[in-house]
Length: 479
Image 1 (cartoon, one colour):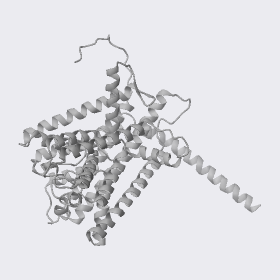
Image 2 (spheres, rainbow, N blue to C red):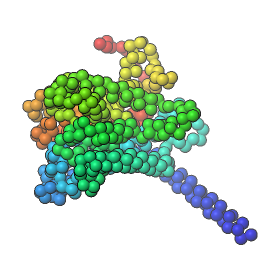
Image 3 (cartoon, rainbow, N blue to C red):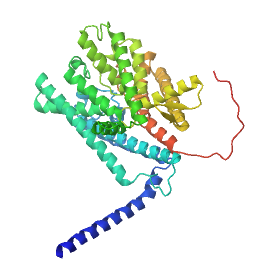
């Protein structure tokens, strides 16, 4: 009898707890809906990153952050904090020589916060957009799934943190063991280097604790291959990770891949092959880059440099000594970037793939875009075109301003501008020689390039405005 009452009491307590959770979720739902309504995502995203950059700048501005114990210039602290939070990797001072251990720790913390923040915000916004679009096509009576619940957001962020920590831990272990066993680094120093470069690689940041980035490891596959794999993993995005996990668990069953995953994986593979072939052919005989290497070394360095324009700023070859043709190919790869809802930047591989299908459809004279058995909505096509147009305009305008302020050649200036906007971090070596005004332009590019595509795409998808009337049609001459 006592046991029966105890079980009944437990069920009653669980029932009350469930009712309390439902009431709490119902109370929070209107607030969350207002939070993600038009205008809020751009403001919140920009505000969060702005506050983080401001805090990082203030801490890096302290004398304790530098190796000499002297407060750095404000623009130097601002540039470094922005580059770390936006996981770019461009630097105006030598990271291992200029910053103290405290300063390096701050840079690492800012990279981690920026990378996790980017993935979390982008994933939550992409889920919100998906649900809005799904509801627009399939209305369900009484459905309340328009807005994300607090529990779903918490589960998403928790999953992102756990996956990121697991990937970074594995990568850090491989790098630490290699540096300790293969290069004679003390255990503590090897662990420090391994953790720093693992976090920097997975978050596509490109910060290195070597003055030559990773050039000294150009022909060491135990260093370059794990770093490249970490860069690709971080750049795929959390939604693709989830689908890969589901596919691995259901190998005996037929797994339905989403259009986003298909475009991301296929376009990533194509760009990696194109980049590998371009670096190999264009730099094969260059005496300042691949020329002195043997065939395996050339293949390895070509593969590594083909991965890095996905928005990770490591390099095993000096970009300042590369041919102009190679720089131009790298510009295009950097501008495309990596996957959505990941740590990569650029206009994203999905945007690039959608634009290719849109062009192909227009050439064929068809009225709607069809991809892999799915029809692309008009709104998504317009968003892709808008993102591309604004990105090109911003890069061109910034390049022009930098040309006015400096005496560097166009190919060098364009390379820096695209690298900053796409949050890549690769450089021809002129970043530190830019005037303060030029550094501030790059700061603006890094900040805008980091939050711009995310907030712009989500804002365009979430905003709906009905026109009260339509004007008469007219077709101006195009072309």
